[in-house]
Length: 313
Ligand SMILES: NC(=O)c1ccc[n+]([C@@H]2O[C@H](COP(=O)([O-])OP(=O)(O)OC[C@H]3O[C@@H](n4cnc5c(N)ncnc54)[C@H](O)[C@@H]3O)[C@@H](O)[C@H]2O)c1
Ligand SMILES: [Zn+2]
Image 1 (tube, helix red, strand yellow):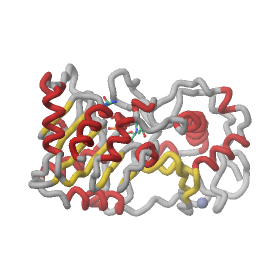
Image 2 (cartoon, helix red, strand yellow):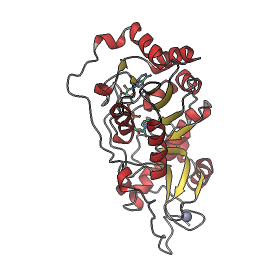
Image 3 (cartoon, helix red, strand yellow):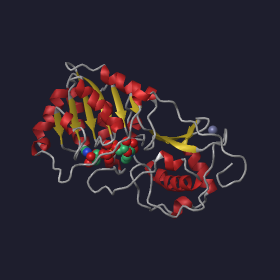
Image 4 (cartoon, protein in one colour):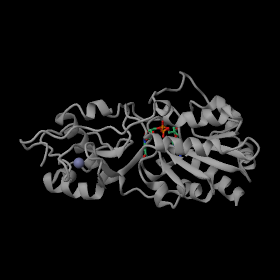
């Protein structure tokens, strides 16, 4: 059955239960006007300070979109990023028009995103020997670089979930279904500009046919956390447990390539800082956690993380 077909009403949407204490309010923040990095943050000695601090410590790593820019996937808030508003969960479930727009753009975007390969930054993260790597990215590139253990905090764009029966299916399979239902669409729009999260700039989405769940007829959604949704409670609990297991004497948190503008990631950094666990932030540009960092490095993640990974070997 497709959304274009008349017939039985779709089954109800079931949202996974979340513990109120763990609900992530997806607040967003931006750099203060005129923000400039401290000149000292860019110095080579700062990279060495980060490496020295991180040697021999248990480590929890939090990564963001800045890890994947070298793989050709744009970020949200880096220099030159165009302001945009990703579709919220409420919009997505508001009706077939919004979903047609989402899936049409995402069909083209994913066809391009899945061609990206891990870069030196992903490979360095895999070599850090961290107790846990938490990524806010949905692109699957840490997995492909062999990072383990890994939590994909906001899910994976390569998976699809049914909002009614919660069955998980592969995006590659859905891509085939979408291609069969919309012949020629991908090719016709293959040069549309790519947005950060597997979306593209595209307005011609009327008539795009969106399939429903093959098990129950429910609404299909990429298995990623949209703005307005919550990360599932057990996932959040696992991340907090890893941070809580760190001690100020021999643990540290390393943030790489994230503005920390989204509370969903920032809360782990706050928790570590409150417990006195050292925090290192490697990012080009402002982050919402700068005041929490013991060492702040303004630099490219691939180079800096390679130095840190070499130091920890
Ligand atoms: N690749 C992806 O899967 C992807 C891409 C964009 C957004 N998202 C989603 O959107 C949210 C965005 O939050 P975020 O904090 O991850 O991204 P963000 O765009 O807010 O921040 C990325 C930061 O990385 C910096 N940066 C970019 N390239 C860098 C490099 N090579 N070296 C060092 N720094 C670099 C940018 O200046 C920016 O400050 C995430 O929660 C994620 O779910 C995912
Ligand atoms: Zn279903």
